[in-house]
Image 1 (tube, rainbow, N blue to C red):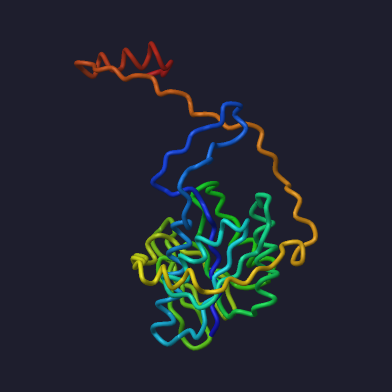
Image 2: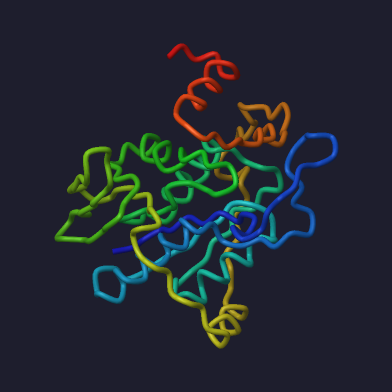
Length: 250
């Protein structure tokens, strides 16, 4: 069984980003970038399936500029077998990501596609679902457990009322939640070895002819400052404040 894992390069989750002076976007110049945390869970789960003898090959794919090689080498250091970079300089939105991944899937023919449930930069949470729709594959989203039995992916996912377990006929698309696993620590020798491994490069335009954006970012702004709180001595004083300042009828 071949597994394809998609990885996005994002601002490291420990970094607090600022906004550009003109409000056009967040300012990421010179900040630390890393693999999307949810995608690391996807990589870890693929490696565990291979260690269990349920997968034979893991291919990692990332979409972006040559700078994305760092997250692909991180995946190679974790234990994936091959890395593919879909080179595209401009930023791509969820639908374009799904279309590009569809092109890679058609070339690689994996039995299982795993990616993070969302990216921590835009929090869209759409690419996996869109990819499954384009491929007409079954999907298991927000997976907190994943196993392979015969020709099925058994996915446990959290829903409002508890958990739901699905049996997906392979090939299928699964999006990983943080509760799926704890990604392994990458050792320095493995990272040094990963730097020597080749990364296959594809051109985005060869996979999808139209990559024009369908959404426009108008402005980015800080949320309004929260008003300072006050202390009251009694319930009556609290009710009085609510009536006076919030206009609540009690």
